[in-house]
Image 1 (cartoon, rainbow, N blue to C red):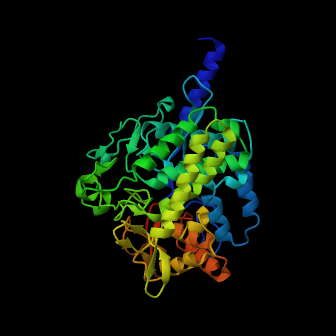
Image 2 (cartoon, one colour):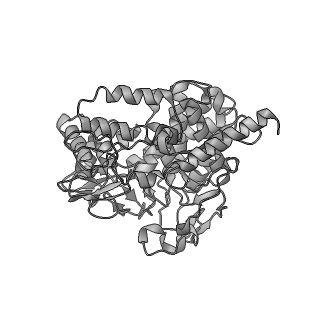
Image 3 (cartoon, one colour):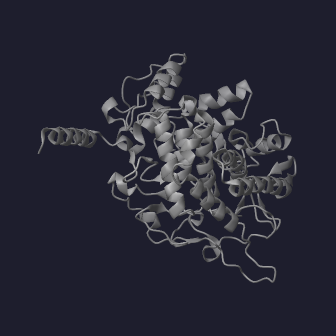
Length: 482
């Protein structure tokens, strides 16, 4: 072997050995580590050692330290320092290039797979640090890799929500035992798809991360280089197809573009009526969603928060298409659909609730049935201003917010540990800190903001990480370390 080849082989082997010697963060995050914060809650330090972090972005590390330097409370400083860089520390499973090209790819995981929604949300945390850069080691490169890989997934399996590693990574596909007996139409390949729950918000998430990157970098050329426009076309084709109602004008049952059944003991893990879901009326103009962002099945498929999110990001993604040029029909199609959805949400998604007046329903079916609640997962009704669909001072939003944050919402959890919106994914009694964070983002009330921040800070069980959900009455009973 030539000297240079031996050197490269040695370096690759050294990197692999280092990765192999790193402990599983899932296990590490279950235990406290020093140095402790020294504050009231004495929170644990939870960042992996430098060599075990999955990627290093100097700008984010510098920003993390700068913000920590401005936080006086030692517990809050520790929590921020653990949580803010966590995606970069633990979730960039692989970064590289598509075979034989310069197309950047980033496999960004939540658990064992890459979810369209989650990978977009994970990157959103770093928007303040996103600046134009052609460097492979930059945050901009990481963003481009996520967008390119999402586009690839959408071109092959646009109804699916989570995906396996790209073949270029050499990482073997994960075994999803929960999905092994799923019956799904359209069919998919489990070598590239981890799970295939159709969620409208997953399609919106692709438009969202595209918007975020473009507005921060003005890098229009990137969107014309690979398969982004084709992926947008695929997204719109699914959205149009999922406007199909249950019945034709003559009463016959129409073939649903998507069906899903799973052998399960949980009602939220499968769809009613042999996989088509509960009936949906014709003529609303809204887009069906089989599942919610929590991955739980919708009760009524006209899921308002996802339609809000899709309408909002159609417009900004259309601006990218417009800037590219030569895609006039696609641009018009996107803007027209956004306008239609906004009109449909206003006409069908606003309902009257005694004691609260006009509010946004969580789900409807077009027949008059409506689900008055909210779930912690984004998009939610609570998050509508955070998503940019409306202003937080909007009177109907304020009425909706008042209802959501009250006992009138069947999934608003109240207790001494954490009072926040939860959801059926973990069930009654479990409040989600995510909902507290969204509540902070949608408030200008200092007392409300400080109250929610205090509850988040006190509900980590000393670990210094923000849990998925926490028992409102028992801070030591929580789901997922982070």
